[in-house]
Amino acid sequence: MNFQLTDWIVLIVTLLAVMLYGIYKSRTSKNLEGYFLSNRQMPWWVILLSIMGTQASAVTFLTAPGQAYTDGMRFVQYYFGLPLAMIVVCVTFVPLFHKLKLFTAYEFLEKRFDIKTRSLTSFLFLLSRGLSTGISIFAPSLVLSSMLGWDIYITNIVTGGLLIIYTVTGGARAVAYTQQLQFIIIYAAMFIAGYYAISSLPDGMGITDALHIAGKSGKLNVITTGMTEKGFDWNDRYNIWSGVIGGFFLALSYFGTDQSQVGRYLTAKDTRESRLGLLMNGLVKVPLQFLILLIGCFLFAYYAYFQAPAFFNKTQERVVLMSEYREAYVAKGISFEQLQQEKKELAVALTNARKTNNEAVVAMTRMELKDVEVRSKAIRDEMKALIKKADPNADTNDTNYIFLRFVGDALPVGLVGLIIAVIFLAAWGSIAAAINSLASCTMIDFHQKFSSKTLTEAEEYRWSKIYTLAWGVFCVVIAFFAYNLGNSLIEAVNILGSWFYGTILGIFLVAFYLKKVQGNAVFTAAIISEVIVIGIYFLKIISFLWLNVIGAVAVVLLSLLIQTLTGRKQA
Image (cartoon, rainbow, N blue to C red):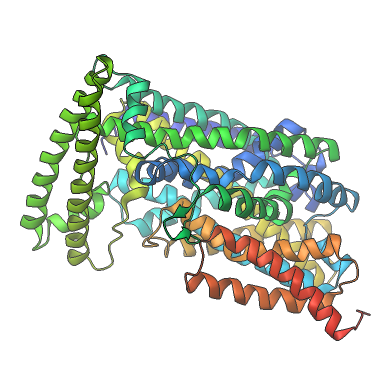
């Protein structure tokens, strides 16, 4: 990456400004309510930006454009169930949580069921959020590694260390107030990058030409049905049905039961402020995610007119170029470059044919472009095979590097530093909120509940910081194992969440709506359901979004069955 002194200045100044702002805003009472819930004084617009900042991790901005570049826009369907989920959360979850003055969502489960059900659910949250936060730490580490040429393990330690200091120091108030500033900078910078991709196209070509190229290459597949000649494909990850139904269950669990989000709206002044923040999130999240993915389509169009790299991960490329497979890799690279030149000529010809309404040439050029895409993919696959031979542990999925490569190769000095700062800001916002929620659950659901010693407010405050530090270290360790996941990072995080979200949601649904079911039944049902979900995933029976539905429905049905069969009521 071509990183100049100006970029360093922009990067450092932006990060320092946000950190100092967070420290300035973090002044609050030094007790659990102050550290974890900011004394419950946040207005709705801070809640909104905090919620969105927690969702929009560095993974979103680093890999979502790459996801669209390789697989098209269909990932946006993943969010289609979110607006409806926001309504249900506002009607059912928010008023109850506020009424009970909870620190964590799982305290309610002890009141409704028993201590073991509360502990199991909190444990499932801690496990899922701890693992996914480790993956989120890996995203900015990836940037540092690519930018400086450092070993990825060193960058994990550096990035994680900064995050730990930032989170331990500030608590929930620093997280919430810095997220609003981060949100504004992040989206402004991303849209500037998208604008630059379009404005860099050859003279006479603009956004409509870019959209046409992307569309005819299958990248504007916003709505897909999942239907094939053999019927509905249950393993199709993103379609309208998995998005609306599976996405609804996932969003309902994420916003209704995941402490990293519940903790954000529990900081509100009252129920009205929480509801406003959540409902506004439901309105703006899908359009914003659409625009982020659209940037990936613009990058695809940009690389139709300019030379696209055969492989976007420069670090991994350097390994194969120093191996015995260098000559074969270089030869394949030359063939790929020739195809890219052919692709550029076809893209220009297609644009000109459209402007002259020459439909015959348009139709023929589209077919030729598709053929070039197929041949290019074949060569890329062969080059990836050579990379794997040179380094059996190599990550040959370069989706995570597409946007980063564009930033380094195409953007002007200064803007590169701002984009890199954006990735770090997104990481800080989401990971800080996650670590804060992990510490709050550990302190409230386990330490306070199972410790025989009564703590003073000062001791509780100190232990909260210790748990924040401990979870930060845990997440850094998990980041060490996130290198070769085989998916884009944004997919990996969502897959991991889907292992647990359905089961957790099912427990809460039973608590809210099935008053006759007692703790023993739901506890047993939850364990069985979690085993079923994990088994289905590894057997590759169905795509991951449906796991959220299966987990929730399984807990509900099994709870009813077990309660009926046992007939015992909890004492």
